[in-house]
Image (cartoon, rainbow, N blue to C red; front, side):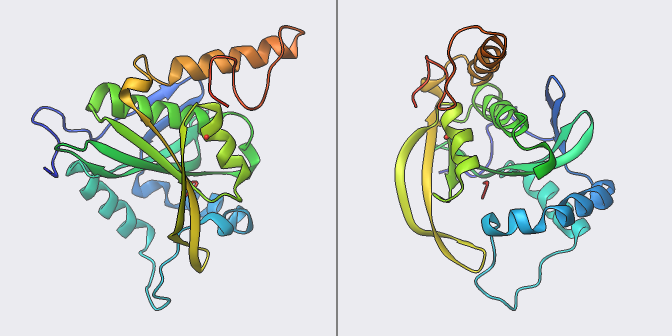
Length: 230
C-alpha cells in the first residue's frame, strides 16, 4: 500500500469551521494555553490518556511535539488539529494512522476541556474531521477506538452513528497498562453526504425537544443507529 496521498491531494494545512467550533493546525504559540488547559484537566484526562510502556521514555516538549506533528501532517500521515470554541483553544483532535493506497483509512482521537464538555464541541469537531477525510481527501474508512469505561466518548460515537465493530483486547497502552478498546467505524459509503448534516439534524432535534417539539433520545436521532478519546 502506498504511504503518500495521491497527487494533488496534499491534506495540510487546513482550517475547518462549523458555527463556534474551529479545527486548525496546532501551533507553537499555542503552548501556554495548551499547557493551561491540560493542567486544569489532568485528573479528568489521565484515565484515557495514551502512555508509553517504557516508563523511561521522556515525553517531547510542546515545540518538539508540534514540529513532529507538522512534519507528519505535511507527509500526509496525520492531521493534528487544535480544537477551538469561539476562537479559544479547548482541546485537540488528531487524525492519525493515515494509510493511502488500497486501504485509505485513518483513526481519530480527541480530548476536550471538561469546562466545555457536553456542549457538542467534540461531536462537531469529529464530524468536521471525518467529512474532510471522506469528502476532500478521499479516505474510505474512519475509526475511533474508545475504552469501554469512557461513557462520554462512547456517546459521541453513538450520536454520530459510528458502527460498533467489537472489542480489541489489550489494544492500547493507557494510564500505565494495556487496555481494552471498543472499535467504531464508518466508511464513505455509509455517509455519502457526510456526517455534518446528520449532526446538524440531531442538534436541531434537541432544540425542538427543549421547546416542546418531538421526543429526543441521547442515543441518537430517529434516523441513526443507536459512538480518543484515545
